[in-house]
Every structure is written in structure tokens, then in C-alpha cells.
Length: 226
Image 1 (cartoon, helix red, strand yellow):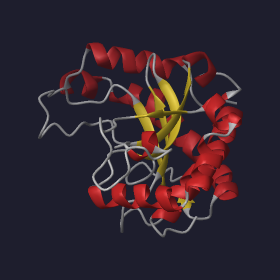
Image 2 (cartoon, rainbow, N blue to C red):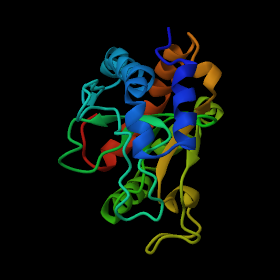
Image 3 (cartoon, rainbow, N blue to C red):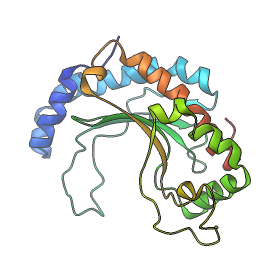
Image 4 (cartoon, rainbow, N blue to C red):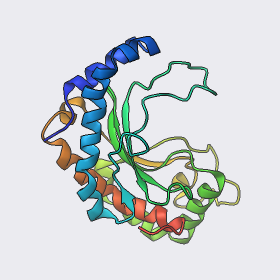
């Protein structure tokens, strides 16, 4: 059964309307009960799923330093000074993520905007170059993974792209759409009704397995074990 309930989305909606430290501290017990505890329980439930996919990825249900992102925003370099995120999110990360950049699996719960995804958001220039070079050297595998009917029916790529071919790459390359990507992320959308239903665990399980070949490919581009 799903660990997520409508109460999670109600809290996030209320937080969006009252995004201040005073309001949040007054409602912190509600945040713990309705958001953090259900998300941590979901993370714990995903440990056997990830073990089937890869021995190198972790679903860590610790309150601090685990797979759940902090609700607090880093506002130091942002014009938006709202102190809290209005969504709950999870990163299922590679065991070596603290040593080097690595692709991740990701879960996002937000009123009107829920998705499961995987890949790399805003990679550094060297990592981008590694992805692009690997696609040029191994185009058949990338095409087989990302153009498969089962993949395209469930997932879509998300993020920014260059307007032109990156320097050093052929503008006429058959995979130029991929080579122009600045974010290498595929996502699958779902709604709040599914998030709060008994169908959620199977949906996440199927989605993570469906995204795994792409993550395996991106790991190979970085010489990471999968």
C-alpha cells in the first residue's frame, strides 16, 4: 500500500500559502507526521527494489544525510527568499556520489506535479562531455534504450538543451537532439490520486526498473559500476 496520503499534499499546499519560518515551526509536528515520516517509510520500502536493480544504489531512510532532501531551501544565491521547498523529494543515489558526479533516481511529490525520474540534472562541463563522447562512440545502445517503445511510452526527457550543436560535435549527427542536452533526465509523470493509492509501490517499482538501463548507460560513460 502507499505510504503517501492526501495529508502530505494538503500540508505542502498550506506551506506554499504560508512560507515563513514562524508558520513552519508552529506546524513542524504536522510536517513530521504527514510528510517526513511517510516519505522515509517509502524510502525504506524501496531498499529491496533497488537491490534488484543495482548493488551500487542506495535507498537510505535516515532523517539526516539520507535519501530524502531537506525541506529547507538554500536562499544564499537566489532572488526567491522563501525559506522552504513546497515539495517533498527523494534521491536514490550511487554509493560513490560523494566522490564524484553520478546519475541518480529521483522521486518528486508536489501538489499538481509528481514524477519519478532518473539521470543527471545540471552536470558539470566535464561530465557533459563524457556523456556526449560516449553517445557518439556507442550510439546503437543509447538508441536501443531511449527509443524503445516501452521507454518512450512511459518516459520523456526533461531539462535544458543548447540551441546549436555543442562545440566539436557534428550538427548533422543522427542523435544531435541528445548531444545538445544540458540536462540528461528522463521522467514519468503521475497524479496525486495515484500517489495516494495502493498502486504507487508497483508504479515506482516498474518505473525504476524501466529507467535502470539508461542509468546503467550513463554510469558506463563515467566508468562507474552499475
